[in-house]
Image (tube, rainbow, N blue to C red):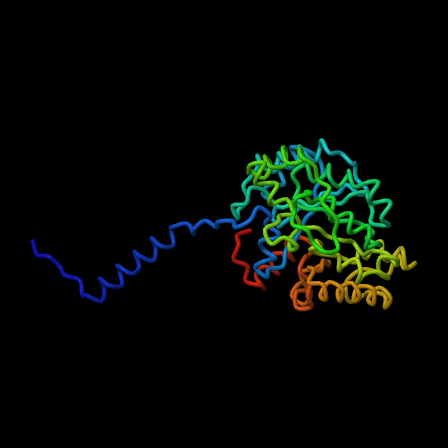
Amino acid sequence: MKKTLLPLGVLLAFSSAILYTCAQAQPPAAYKPKRINRAIELLEQGQPIYYSGGHGGYEEGKKAAQTWADYINYEMEHGALDFTALRAFMQGLVDGGPTKSGHRTPAVIVTLPVLGVDEAHMKANFWVVQQTIACGVHGILLCHARSPEAVRVFVESVRYPNAKPVPGLGEGLLGNGSQGFASRIWGITAAQYMKKADPWPLNPDGEFLLGLKIEDKYALANAEKVAAVPGIGFAEWGPGDMGISLNLPDGHGANEDLHPQMREARAKVLAACKRNKLAFLNTVRPNDVEKMIDEGVRIGSGGQEAAEKGRKYTKRQMPW
């Protein structure tokens, strides 16, 4: 039987095609998380982050485990202050995980009915902050952050007494026992949790992301002071409440349609964030997300379409 020899060029092209097809068939190397808190990991990479809302208990958590968002804002400012439900939600996230990026859960940041109006209010209610942290969450967003003294107590509430001392902050208020359930949610030992349970970027190894809502005229007057408190990682200007406080309930909407006073308020909070190296939170939409990122927005609300457009714009490498 006569053998037919193919030309060398054809053989090389054929071999290259096979190798390319095999390479394409191989799944990409799995992303290896470097931190527990996905949101912090992305901010450290210089990447903007995006969030969605959360509520409820175990089943809601299990469904949210594969969310498109980088973190979940769990609402307890106006929703029910229910720590049992929050614990169940966190367990649902674990059981429904891990995320596409390999993190055990998305980060969870909680809003509370405890407000940063003054030091006395914060001291009387810091236990709510501690109960929330003990549920295994990754951060808290303090609403109506009017007082730097209140913000200081807020930060102290999520630190252990043996944490590294910081000028401007007193001794931490977290007590032994708070690490039990939370460490199991994080998938680490209790001893490891106590080392990581600290605000970032104050502690470069900390896994808590603390934020402020500078969202009324009193907070706005102190924007620079509250943003300068050590331990805070981000802030927003809360246009809904800011509009009510300035008697401009209809003065907010699309970023380009803001009332001049509202635009001025936003600019003041953004400037305070930049001076104090805090991530600025603002609504982003598909038609303006790139512009917002260029302006300095590092945390976006507004939905999946805007988030995916923003991720592509900043060439995000972490899977989502």
